[in-house]
Image (cartoon, rainbow, N blue to C red; front, side, top):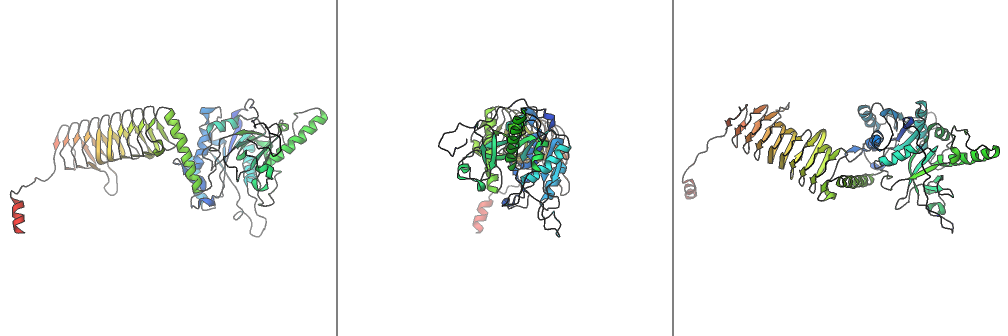
Length: 518
């Protein structure tokens, strides 16, 4: 909403209607990730700080690459251009390495840093600011033949796919994403024209007049537009007199001035809509805008912001899963990961944590205080499996239908067969548990010899007694029995009984003799 400084009321601002979208294949995606993140007070560069178990930069990239399910975005890694700090900066090394490992097809553009990238003999330092970053990116975008662009930020992990799709669909030569926060303090204000449909300026709060500060419609930083046209505007940006930075928000003023001039020129010759000097045929329409939500437009600049972003993401994602048929007894205590997938009729009790990639099929019950960590290898829980309470399901665990991994059980790289049970107080690692097998309390697979891991195989229908140590490599046959308290060091044939424990001795009358001696 826009608050009018004058005495007359103003209509509610309404974004201009969206005509037919341009061909999506010509759209590039620019992600700004060159911020130092000093307020994070961390040796880790800001884009690599996680939300929902993923680095924030990954949220931005997945947002683009996964856009196909909400529109014809048709994006690939080759259409993504990321502005990053120079590799020579110690904290930037990890970010460059992350891209090389995860997304080698993404184009990285190094933004010069004032304290590092200038000749010490030359007092002229490189300019900085969002205007510089966007100009560098658009130079690469235009040279690679992309007609349009969408600009995102690496520290805004809550932007939704629907909003990016709307930006992609905008035909404006320049369009910004605005929002109305509960408290606009600190944000640049979006100044609209008299129709409330076009954006004429974005004014930083420190430069705003009292009337402009009364405006509640604020700048998120995200924008889209015609690549060559906006690059031309970037070349006309001038440094802020107070910070000596180039601001992308000043593009609005330049575009509005160009539009006014183009309209006047067109009127004088009777030809509105002709191509202007910047290469746009529609600049007379000035700058468009769409409105997002305060949550998705939140930027992360500190650890407090990071925690808030995590809470918002969790609340949003819990709600999405519950609307699809998942039961959460106490939703606020369930912590999901970005790669958690849940099916209808899953029940999750309080205080359950998901990490990494975890796939949960229908009718699974995950009981209280369980942790499921599918990093680095996925976890899969099949239909009607039961987990916990107090279970720790680690990387590479597969629990088949109707199997049970109970209280105080830890698993790692295990396949638990259909209907098998590990009810309580066990560690089972690097093992294959056959269909219908049962492991008693305190069973341990001794899978590590100090240098290498070894697997244990337990056949279908086998029974392993309580407090048994299975020393891998080891095979227990189908329907075999292991006596409680055994230490098993060799294979056990199908249907056999294995017992390895010392025979007990009974001394009658010992207690009386003991007391008499004292």
